Structure formats: C-alpha cells, structure tokens
Image (cartoon, rainbow, N blue to C red; front, side, top):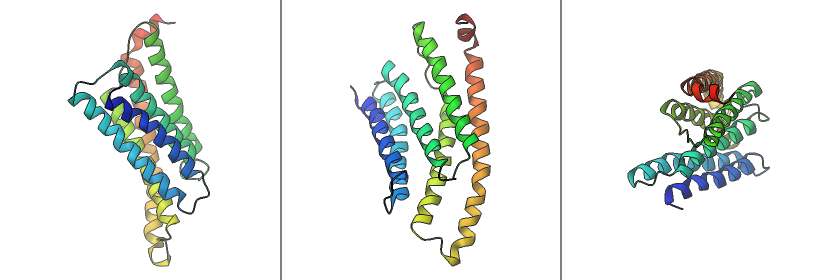
Length: 192
C-alpha cells in the first residue's frame, strides 16, 4: 500500500476520533474535534497531491478517496445536527447525495468501470469542509469562553452567517450530484 492510500485510510481513523471528540463530554471536546477535522482535511489535500506527483494513482485510491471523503463529511454533518449547528434537512441532503453517487459508482464497478471524483465534486467537498470547519470553530470559540460580554456581538454576527453558508453548500451539493448523474446517464440507462 503506497503512502497516498495510507493517508486516505488515516483520514478514516481521524474521522472516528473527530466523532468521538465532538460527541464526548471532554472539557475541550469541540476544540479537539476541530483539530482532528482540520488534520483530516489536510490529509485529503495531501494524499491526492502525493498520488499525482509520484504516480501512485491506483484504483483503490480512486474508489477509497472519495468514499472516505463521504464518510468524513457525513459523520461531520450528522454530528453537528444534535448540536443545533446544522439543520437536519441540510445534513440529510448532503448524506443522501453522497449515497446516491456512491450507488452510481457501485453500478459502474459492477460493469468494470471506475468513476473517479471530478472537479465539481471536489469543489463541493471543499465547500462542505469549509462549512463544517466554520461551525466547529464557532463551537470551539464558545467552548473556550471567548464569547464573553465584549465579544458577544462578534460571535452572534458570525453565527448568523452560518445559514448562508449552509444554503450555498447544499445548493452546490445538489448541483454537483445532478451534474455527475447527468454525465453518467448512459451508465444509469444501461443498468435499468
């Protein structure tokens, strides 16, 4: 197993640690979750760069990299719902889109094809990561008690920007899913 694929699998471990920290009763659980998520996001960038630079692009990586991304994002959005950071409808939309695209990839693999991630999907993932980091940062700031009386207006202003970010992320998530399905409509049609 090459280093790019090891980085991909390490992101899966970091996702488990992220979920454990965010759902824990640790004093600085949200801050630890933010750190785990940031490191996982960095590995997402680095594994692709390493694979392309050293010619380590494999079918395993083409399949597992987007799959682990989906697990990481789904875990993050689902974990943020009970904390009232992200609405349930937004998390459901993100997770449903990712399940449908994964289903499309499974159909392709059954016919001997590998459907790699595309640029629009990577942009969608970037927006999702930014959205999660935004809310984790708010939770961390609140947890670290920087939202005192003098900075409450700052905290509230940033918190009010959250719904706008959620709408942009959900819109791009839906658009990228429809575009991906449209580009592979022949595959869908032949498997009906």
